Image (cartoon, rainbow, N blue to C red):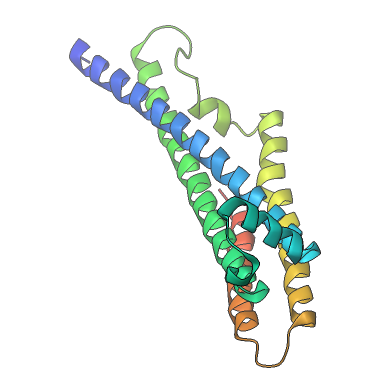
Length: 192
């Protein structure tokens, strides 16, 4: 392989590694946003007036201009689902990037004579024998979705028990709940 080809391949490797780190940061931010949306759900379910007070304090609005609790609940359902879908997409895109990065590392390692010079990301994280990867992966890919699923199930049951007849917001929330559960199950039980 020519030196220019090696430089191009290494440059591509470095660029791919940088973009992977940016994606990891973005994924972590979406996970924090997901936790924040779940906390907001909890606050609203526990005490809607407290959430109203927070909204009035932050926005400067008065109590009469606030949306009703059902509309606010539907808004939080939709926002939380959107955040989870973005998180879901980022996780799978990162896994694809790690596999691609491992292939680039194999190519670079075949060029250089030293033992596995390039094992920064791809090969290390894709190893099946990496115990810390297994534990973290289990927590993020199995435990967190199941806990979120249990939480939103309790949430939708509570909303159902508090609903009046012909509650349009409840129908929308149940629809969002079904979509949410679908994505949670897909995320938790999809084989990589």
